[in-house]
Structure formats: C-alpha cells, structure tokens
Amino acid sequence: MTHPAESGAAAESASRGVGRRTSPRQRDIAELAERAQHGEPRAVARLISLVEDASPLLREVAERLTPHTGNAQIVGITGSPGVGKSTVTAALVGALRGQAKRVGVLAVDPSSPFSGGALLGDRVRMQDHATDLGVYIRSMASRGHLGGLSWATPQALRVLDAAGCDVVLIETVGVGQSEVDIAGLADTTLVLLAPGMGDGIQAAKAGILEVGDVYVVNKADRGGADQVVRDLRSVLSLGATTGTWRPPIVKAVAQTGQGVEDVVAAMDKHRDMLQSTGGLTARRERRARDEIEAIALTLLRSRFADLHGHADLDALAADVAAGRQDPYTASDRLVAAL
Image 1: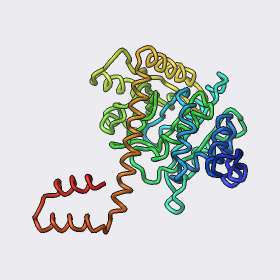
Image 2: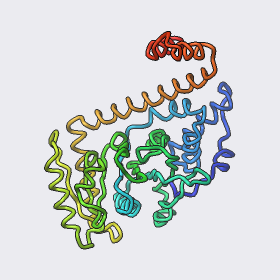
Image 3: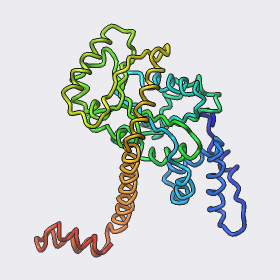
C-alpha cells in the first residue's frame, strides 16, 4: 500500500500480459489482480480507475478479486458537513497504523462542477500519511449520486479488500434526509456530531441517528459538547433498540488525537459482537444482495435504452396513448420481450 499518488498511465504501461492461452485483455486483468493482491499501489489505482470508468472489464475484475475478499473490516464515517469527518478519518488511520494494520481509505468527495472529478479536499487533510506504505487513500467523486457515496464505491471497496487492507474507512460527502446509504455498505457505521452543528433532534430529523453503530462527538474540547452528548442520549433512548448492541457515544478531539483510541475500541467491540452473533455475515449478505440487484437493474436499464425508438416500444406507447391498453400491461409485454 502507499500514499495517494496514483498514475493511471503508469499503471497501464505496467500492465503487460503474460501467458499463452488467454487474450491480451484477460492477461492484463489477471496480472493487475495478482499485483493488487500483493498491495502494489499502481495496480490498485488502475483497478479502481476501471471501476470508476464503468469499464467493460469489470466482470473479469470482480471474478478475479472476489475469492480474495471478505477479510477487511469496513467502517463507514458519516455526519453533517463541518463535523470534522476528514480529520477524524486521518486520526483513525494513525491509530490503526499504530496497531500495525494496513488501512485503505475511500474518501467520497463532492464532484467538481467543471471536470466531474473529486475536489480532493480529503487528501489535503491526510498528507501526514502520504508516505506510509501501509496506507492507501483514494478520493472518489460522488458525481451527483444520492446517498453520500459514489455509485462505484462498493466495487472499489472490493479492490481494497482483495489488496490486503485490514480496515477500509469509507468517508462520505455528508448526510441528509436521503443520504444514508453508508449503513448498507459498512460493517460498522460511525456517525459524527459536533457542538454548534445543530442539536440531536435536528440530527434525528435528518435520519442520521437511524444508521449509527457508534456515535462520536468530535471537537469535544469546545463548549456545548456535553449538551450534545445529553441530547444524543435523549434521542437515542426514544428509539427502539434491537438485539444486544447499544450504540456507545464517544467524545473525541480528532485534531489532537484525544479519544481516538476509544473510537477504535468501540469499532472493534462492535465487530466482535457482529461476529459472535452472526450479524456480520447477515450484513455482508445484505450488501451482496444490494450489489447484485444494482448490477441487474443497470443491465436492464441498458437494454431498455437500446429499445428507445424500437418498433415494439413505439407500438406499445401508441396503444397506451390511445387508450387501447394500460401502461402496466404494456410494461409486462415489454419485459417479456426482453
């Protein structure tokens, strides 16, 4: 693993195929996958670039990498803008590296309105880890995707998992009423709050408190931190608690590292609970179902796009417009034709 410096061109030139019975394309993917499994940063960068570009090679990438996944602890980090997500992420990387763990970071940045790429603000805050060979940081543009995550995040996660990361931290753009997708992707979700960023009731309205496994009150050295904790406890007590896990509230000052070890301990405790109860398998199976469904729907959409202007679709549309059949019957016929 390495720092955020990535070169797609260098990765391409390094991806020379070997073997005699496979096509050049298959050789390239096979070699890239093997190099990525050894943590080679350029191979990891190239594979994630293929993911972001929706390359037609993604099937082969997934086929090569999937048998080597399932070992990384996946931690989602979310919270309203301004609570210090990037600072907390950087502090967690330092604490995890102190435990000799290899760490991957997927920082989902807002998209540039000009290039569509990530604005890279998170990398600026993580320069302390830029030369650490045990850390891989990748900024990904959200590209307008609702949920606070890039559409490519699940597949990029597979790459880092297969590349030998012990922990993968996924930092979202920020959350709102519809932006809670991180809960479906992570094994453990950290929800960040901070003094002056609104009380617990507002956080509940935004849907944030429904997704948290661990709550972190960052910037706890500021006035009002204790009140945030009290508000949070009050709101959490109103919700129904399922199972044996009661989400802890941890105070921290990520800028100085205060309380960060407690956050890591809470993460590990939650993972241990999931493993002992079978919850980890259940979460990962749910994640796999969501990914399968998303891929299937994407394939269907592409087929429907191919039908645009097709005679059958035009005929069905004419029948519906003329009242000769209803849109549900027309849809059934269109799906049957596929």
